[in-house]
Structures are given as C-alpha cells and as structure tokens.
Image 1 (cartoon, one colour):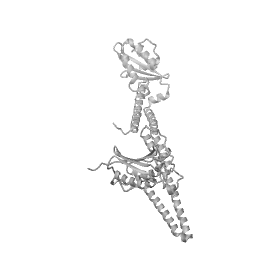
Image 2 (cartoon, helix red, strand yellow):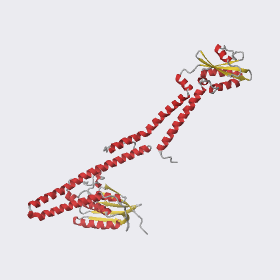
Image 3 (spheres, one colour):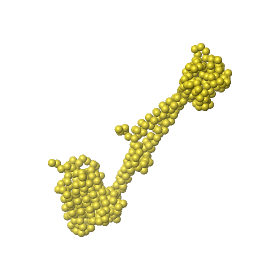
Length: 453
C-alpha cells in the first residue's frame, strides 16, 4: 500500500508514537500513583481503597494465616509500609507492640464507619475493617510516611498538574519533531531567496541519493539551480560572443564606407566589400535566429533516407575540389521521423559540412543510418584529428571553436553544431560526439514513427 511516501510515514508514525507515549506515560503515572501506599491519603478527602491498599486488603482477608507474616514483611521491605492486624481488643495478630496512634485510629472504626485516617508524628495512618474466616472481624492499619520527593507528592495529589506535565512533554516532543521535519524546508526557503537575489551559487547540502521526499526536493532544487546558472552563464557568454562577432563586420563596413567617401573613384570596389560584409551579417543573424529558435509542434513526416541521400550528394560535390568524399550507407529504403520546417535539414547539413571540413584530403566522411529499437541512429565519422576529450561536450555550444586561432573568414561562426544540437533536441533525439582514434564520430538518435499501411 502506498501511503504517500516516506515523509507521510514519518509524520504519521511520529505523531502516533508521540500520542502513544503520552497515553502510556499517563497510564503508567496514574497506575504508579494509584498503587502507591499513600495514594488514598493524598487525595482530599481520602477516597475508597484502590491499587496497592485494595490488593493488600484482599490478601489480608484471603491468604492463609501462615502467609500473613510474609505478606506484611514484603509490604514493609518493598513499600516501607507497616501493617498491623488488630483484634477487637486492640491486640496485634503477630504479637507486636502496638503504638498508641495505631490504637487510636483503629478505635475510630465504630458503627457503620469502615475506614479512618489519622496524621500523627509525621506519619500517615489508614485503618480499615476487614474480615477473616478464621479470626472474624479485624482492624487493618497501614502506617507509612509520605514521599520524601515533593514533586512526586504534588503529582500524586494534583490531577491537573499531571495533565499539565503531559501537555508540556508532548509539546516538547512535537516541537522537536516539527523542527526536524521543517529544517530542510527552512533551508530551501533561504536558498530560494538567495537564488532570487542573484546568488547563482546557492545550493543545499544533501546526500547524493536516498533519503525521503525532502532530500529529493533538495536534489531537485540543486539541479534546477545548476541548470539556471548554466543557462544564465550561457546567455551571458552568448551575448558577449554575439557582440564580438558583430563588431568585426561592422568595423569593416565603417572602414569601407569611409574609403568610399574619400576615394570616389574606387566606390565600386568598396561597395562590393560593403555587400560582402552585409551578407556576412545577414548570415550570422540568420544562424543566431536558427540556433535560438523556439520549440514547435512536429506536424509532418520526414524521410531521413531521402534527406541524407540529398545532403551527402551535395557534400560530395563540394568536397570533390579538395579530393574529399562522402559515403552513405543505410539498412532500409525509408526512415520516417516527425519533423517541422527545415530545422532538422539544416542541423544534419551542418554536421556533414563540419565533418567534411575536418577530414583530410584523400579521405571520405562515413555516414550510416540504421534502425535500433524504436530509434534511428545516424553516425557521421571523419578522419580528422578529433577533438580534445575535455572539449567534446562544448563543441555543441554557440560560437565554440576548437581552433581559437582560426580566422572567422574560414572557420565559420561556431554555430553549426549548436544549430544541429537544437534541431535534434526539438525532434526528441540526442546528439553526442566521441573520438575514435582516427577521427571524430558524431552520433544522432531520433525516435522513429510507424510506416503507414
């Protein structure tokens, strides 16, 4: 049975145990004070025999005569109570000397009165009429001294004091339990406020796995904070990269305009330069928009086999001039995936172009497509020098280049693989890269859809 998780079970069991502990302590305390020899005397007025005294009276009336000395001795040893059994003449059955106060309290048992109470010499005396079959009517006198612990005496004599003590103990236990359960929530509140104030390093201390729902919540918060920090830092980095990328063509545009104004005879040449820089700006802005395109519905079907045949043919045509080729292998004639627009086409084209650019002359880019379970797996492998292991995950970031010294004019803008990653993710797939020892292998997985009958 699912009771709602470990936190619910902890709260339920915790309060259940607290309630049980309070009731048990109440019952034990009540039993203890009821069974104490002085319990019937410490109530004002003295009530009927209960607990210890009631049991003793029963035993005194029904035990064998030979057991009476043992019974009285046990009461003396265990409870510090002296018991006298007096005849109507005031003599003790065990032939002990009878103190005057014992005779006095026993003498008060006259007529219908069956119980008497007396305080004398710091001791409490309680007398009862009892009847034994072998001796007839007797007086049982209990002599004891009140508890030396004042607190116990107060608890025994005051019902409301016992109730108050139980309430205080229950409150302390509940406070500790509540503090324990809400400590993580208070930490979460503090970390959330720090995060809202701009502290992107705000995290909660939590174990890596296991625990209850509060631990899961803390791990989810840390994951959220980490993703938020990563995205904000990526946006800041993207803004800086965009500014840097735009600065160069804009600067060249300004220089070309100034030269055209100073040298009207060379206006045509400067206008060509202006046109070229304008086209670069337009291309850069287009790639930026593509890399940051919003998600949309996948409202049509796309055949990967047909698409890759076209893209590999175009790439082979471009690579012929540099003695580079592209080889495409596939295990079926059709591979349908859900798609929209041309984002996936642009992403796969960027992967092929990147591989073609980095494979050496005289080699070919190996492209393969196969169905694996409920997915299609596309593999694009070049024969280049690969990528440093520490940078494999970063090659899909905007404006990232493994060769930072490479000029923008020949190295592109570093947005191709970023567009590819976004396209693949929007289509419900995954993209990853690894070094094979003889080049770089980029693997793309896309969910397949059933071929209509």
